Length: 72
Image (cartoon, rainbow, N blue to C red; front, top):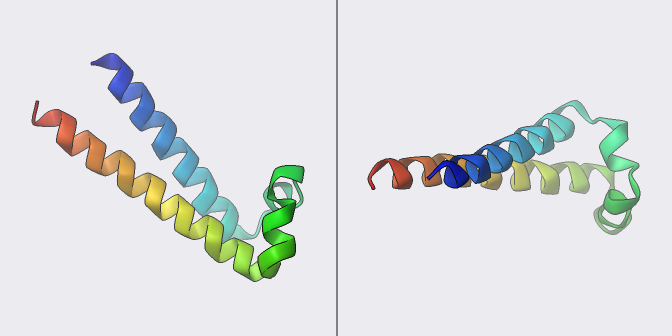
C-alpha cells in the first residue's frame, strides 16, 4: 500500500513542477534539451499551455488515485 502513496507523490510533485514552470515561465524548463522540441513545435506560449495541461492532468490523477485507494 505504501508504494501507491509513493506513486501518488511522484504524480503530484511532477504536476506541481509543470504547473509552476508554465505559470511563471521558467527558463530552466523551457530551455532544457528534453523540452526543446516542444518549444520548437508549439512556440514558447504553446509549450507553456502544453506543460500547464500536463501539470493539471498529473495533479488530477494524483487526487483521483488518492480517493480510489482510500476506498480499498
